[in-house]
Length: 388
Image 1 (cartoon, rainbow, N blue to C red):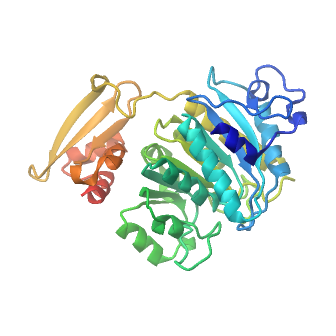
Image 2 (image 1 turned 180 degrees about the vertical axis):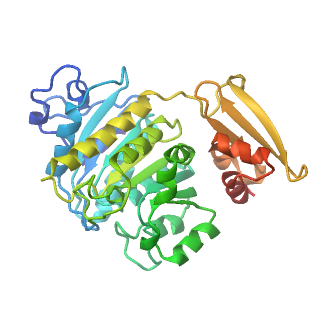
């Protein structure tokens, strides 16, 4: 119930909305204010909230720093038509970290259940685990994508924290993780054994150089996500001075904006988190970039095409490609609404209905070309192994 999750949130200070001129986001975002009360969440709305939980992260945050991002976001121009946008305020740290996780997971689950898209402004990246638990509550098998310079795996016995959360997700029972992908990892920060493990699990991993070489190739990976987790320290310090790791290499600001826009465009994605965002709020460049990344996510959502899952197959062009001397037939679909591509992976009924959302795999025209040259696209093969 939405009235139940309202108890988790602190309302937004009214002075954040003072002086917001017409045509800006601040003039029309529905906010949780003391004098107005908790807003209603409607289907299709983008629902933003902050979490000032940093006890398991080296990047320290606070409600004040989260509100500094809001100050910048509210000043940006509104290009989003009738897209409903809500800001629920901030979740303060609970008595224990687990209490905060409980508040986050219940809030995300309630938002998704109402048909909204949850946007978390963190807090440590360990909140990805809390976000993941929301899908367990919804009994929904999910794909998780992390944009991070590291894998944040950790060992089985390690305490869960912002740098060691993925192992907990992989081993958590009941397990609702279907696939994991990492974008923009930096090889010098990653143990070779971790790379080996990722490949054994048929997870998708892409080096920073691969992402930067052709940013548009990231789009099908992001389109396949139900949940996206972005560690803001993946952005180089020259673009994001609040980077608590002071990284000389990483994504450029415009590349982070492009990934956020791809996430917004995906009809499948229902939650996104921006974590380890502001180690300091003294440099306004960082708060401005964080606000602009959020803006590009909203831009993506406002341009969703509603072409997945399939509503009417007559709106798609179907191509069947026979490969390896007829051993496999790969069926491709191209949306006539968006020109985006998917490929169908054989789905064994023994796996049950909960996996049916994952047998249509987002892909690119390059994957279709590879199949035409008698090659098996990596995305198709990895999904085939998981479903088999």
